[in-house]
Each structure stands twice: as structure tokens, then as C-alpha cells.
Length: 107
Length: 118
Image (cartoon, rainbow over the protein chains, first blue to last red):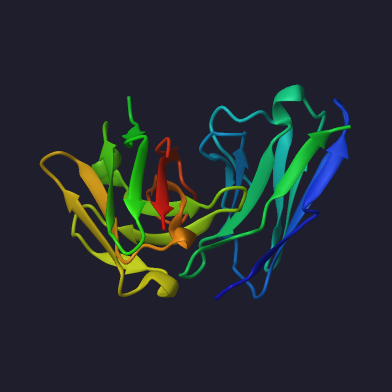
């Protein structure tokens, strides 16, 4: 199985800040990496697919980058609605696997 | 409007089975694979497997092989996951999610809370 190591597990930030979440795969996964946002009590929402493709309706302050085994989600100009938990997922090979999640909290 | 609709909750006893449904509307059923992902209370996301609604073909995470079954009813555009020999460790919210291939889940059901009592 491909292990997805996400860091940090939590972070505190203020509105307007820029934050970065990283996701490292245990082996190369090409660009088969997606990012999800999950607000409390809700289903996850796809933000970015194929490493860097922003989904329709997702604000441009979200940016995905990376290649091989190392990936990054950057959120610029953090807004109140961005305080949530974020997950990465690899779809390179089954079993598909998720990172452990990053909780973005208000400082 | 394309969406996935799931029942709200199920309560089962340890050792029993649970079948969770996921009704698809719009073109979801014809254009996507349906995956199942679960989330234990306070925990992260865990992939369980997928079904191809067109062919009925399935692929499961190894940890569930032998006690998970996925089917679909094309007449009602409903996908179902059947998990057997439940334990308290299966208590979780079960989500269905749709993807056209390998590029992330564009649609999610609202989740079904399955509670397993011992």
C-alpha cells in the first residue's frame, strides 16, 4: 500500500495568512493526487485534482503543486470559511489512500 | 441536478450485516465509478472500494475482502455496499463518492452513520 504522510496534523493561522500543507507519498505517484476540504459534520469537498487542477467554483487562493512523491496545498489570504480539515488522497494505485488530515484552526 | 443521496443512519448489532444505499441522479451513474469511503468518529478518511455501475465490476481494499460486497441497481441508479460480520470498529460515517476515473471525487453523498452496538 502507498502511505500518505500529511503534515502538519494541525496549524493555527489568522485571517489573511498564507498556509502550506504538505503530503508525501511512500513512493512516486505521478500526478495522481487530490486535495479535499472537510468542514465539521459535512462530507469532504474536492478542491484540487491531478496535483494542481482547481475544481470549478473553488477560489483561486487555493493552489496545488508538486510531483513524484511530494505535494503541497497552499492557501493564500486565508478566509474564515477556510478553517476546516484538509486531506490529500493518492489515486495512483489501489488501495487508494488518504493522508491523515490537517486541521486548520483560527489563531 | 447531479447528486448522491444516502439514508441518514443505521444501527446494527455486533456480528450483523449492514447494507447502505446511495441513489445517484443526473448523469452520475452513467459517467462515473462509485466509491465508498468511511470515517470513524474523530478519525480520518478510509477508502473501502469501488464499483463500476456500467459493468458491475468491483475492486476492494484488502482489509475488507471477504466481508464486503458492492452491487448496483441500474433501474433505480442506486449503488449499495454490504458489509458483514460487523464489529464496534466498523462504527463510522459511510460515504459514497463519484469519480469519472482517477481525478478525485467530484460528488459525495451526505454520509450514513452506521453504529454497531456490542
